[in-house]
Image (tube, rainbow, N blue to C red; front, side, top):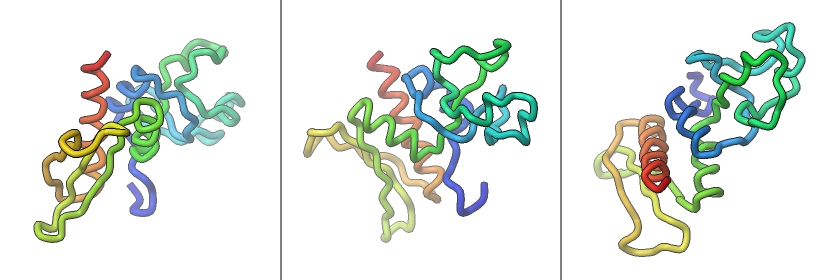
Length: 144
């Protein structure tokens, strides 16, 4: 990952997000387990790929059926925003100066006090964000 790019969800996270209803536009997708940027360089004969960006949209009529296996590959930040907007769970990353480590915190919108949850410490922000997303997906799956 380029240090100036936002972290992309793992293939497993992307599949779990799709089950949770993620259908926002993003410019990367998983074709099988390979994450690719949508565009003509990867799909030179398919004009739909160059103009379309919601790979989880079940209402779209793909040409040959192969594409229905494609999965949107959002950034972790976009996935966290989706969970906040759709399910009302706010997740944030905090830095602990004392330990020089990152941790995540999450809570439901409108909850206060004891309804705030903290997690383990992580050496870097990317690992912490990914762990937060996994935790929130676990919560959503238990609720369904």
